[in-house]
Length: 638
Image (cartoon, rainbow, N blue to C red; front, side, top):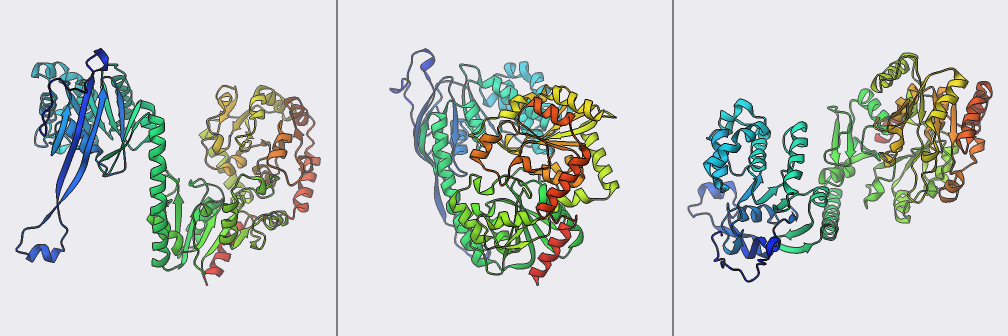
């Protein structure tokens, strides 16, 4: 029992029946800190009075029981009292009032920066920590070699802890707690520590430890996934009070809804502040890609501007904190979506380039001198953009925000004008991503070798790229189940005389849903390759259903085929601008038809039809889209 209250030997609320006994009992717990009132430097230096203090209540009247064998998650925003509560249960902090009873169980706390004496060696700290956890010296000695081995510290175990890196410190702390198994484990945001190898090992060990039916565990984590995987109950703390205590899924749902609401309030305040605070910089361009990563049109335009426009400031928006966008450059600043830096960049950029419906997610009030450019991901594609599942509010916001639409053809210009960008100005520059398809021979050869080396394509094999479009949730995954890769390879081999390797690239949103591609012979999962344009350059044949990349593939003058078993369903739910049969590509609704189309492929007729199709759609791609767009931006900058 800890100081701050008298726990009765036989608590009235304790269940004494076997495994139902409470491992932890907390009653009306109050913990506060004294904080010094803020002063200016001048006041601090010249004031003769002692600094006055405020009282901060970190935990306010908290009560709960945790049964033996329960795994309980503790969640809440930063500063809500989670770590203070854990440290109090561990006996590190004394409460102002209330009761903490661990009923004779020994307790370990796993937390960064807690429990070590920096002047002592790692060895000394193992024994000190073990004694504080209630183990005898003999018990610790018995486990000592196992702790050192698990920590991977080697001879560093005899060095003072103050010489350790943060990773070494964390490894030792984890190893002590993991090997000296206690009845109650308190884990504070340190479920996986160290390098990649140690993280994997430590997570496996932790799962082993908490799976013991008699061990009681409390876990503090900001990761909903971790809490969901490990905990059967969740306590939500907010400003030192328990807001909810119950089943994991429901409590997480309530907490996430609350945090979303709080973030929305903060974002609204940030937007108003930065809109009024900053001035538009005439040479700043904000690049806002749909997927955050360095790919597609915005990638190629960014690369061009970094090389050819050194006087411009470029800002890239990423979607997640730990996201690696794939490029570093002194003149490219990276900001995280929905942060103060993001709103500052949005309102201070002269040019904003959006290749999706990214900007409309925010209720942005644009400055009069700012210019927003829209690029469609599909150019000559047949899919009706108005059939995509986008809310009316987003459509209206996009229509209000966008100034210019980037087009590569008369057909795409008409698509803009027949949708929700009816009155917008058009920049008929072509698409930046397609500049690569017009590159000189050496550039393409280098890319082909890059892709072949990346996927270890056997020498002499030709590459076939199969990349279907995204399936709406309401649609069947028809062609995924019916695609017979062995039959496809045989048909291609007979027609073209090649041994082939098939690169299969599912849409980003469908990544990981197609297990068959991991098993089929001669098939490679290319879903992790960020840039499909490079895969197109490397491929000798292209196959898709309705994805727009196949129309860009025409510029390479290589054979292309459509395999669309569920075309009727897709037409009804999404819609096409024109029938599949009007494209230059042979169309198949089943594997037999696809094999027949490959066998009957007429190169001369195909190229003639492709040329006619591009002419009919008014295609104006010349391989200089980046240059043309950059020139347009410069004119807008004045």
